[in-house]
Length: 370
Image (tube, rainbow, N blue to C red):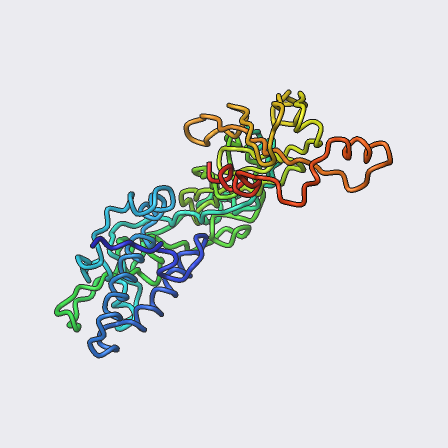
């Protein structure tokens, strides 16, 4: 039987917007808790340990994390838990031997943090799309040092501790055999260079707090569960590091008369008893303006009347759903003398229930199920 993988963020107990440091702290805590040597051969703990390691191996890599955020497990190419290799969890050795273990080589400035913002949109903007200009608080490049982090006229020098590699390598014996632990150089923090005379404005970071204006094109059909990624609109990385990404979420305001269900829109259409009996043409609201609806004679409560193509566009395909009008017959609670006489002439007081083939709520459930 195939194994259904849990969301990696859920596995590590962190939010999707967590920082690399928060991710690492949570991983270390869980890996220590479920390490096989601490659980006396408990198979459940062993599987949990493998699951934690697999999740961290993806989320700790910025490129893999971006692909996972966009496409989920389909983008990771990760094996099932049973095929998990302890080699993919080198950071675990940090907890036993110190340092900051890294599997990937290379030096250079760190990438900037990803940011997330939520935008309030109207029901109509969610249906048809819109353009919105927003102001994003974020770290931006320091103009005084042009992002280098060094005082004007000076520059960074090669780190003498790691000889510019950004890494320190140590070979040691562990419970898994001989292991080469590659850790980040503590002096240059993995950049391979150090700044002896930092910029006074940004204090060597190469960036300062600021605000940035971003134009957001809201696609037609967005809903509360849609997240839009704007590449390179996140924070500037320290000392010339690449830009992070900006994730935009949406909060759709409710419509006073229309209710969205997927790509369909549901409208409760109230009609009077004479309209239900004799039929009528009624003007109803839609997101595209008012629309005439033909009510056939003898219409029963709960009848569904579809207005094709007047629903919400699918956010990817663009195909619009329908508007479903659910008929509700409004029975008057008060009658004047003349109205009462008319109803008495119609009769129908037979001392037994009228035959009803289908109820209103059955039809409503069918409409919501699509």
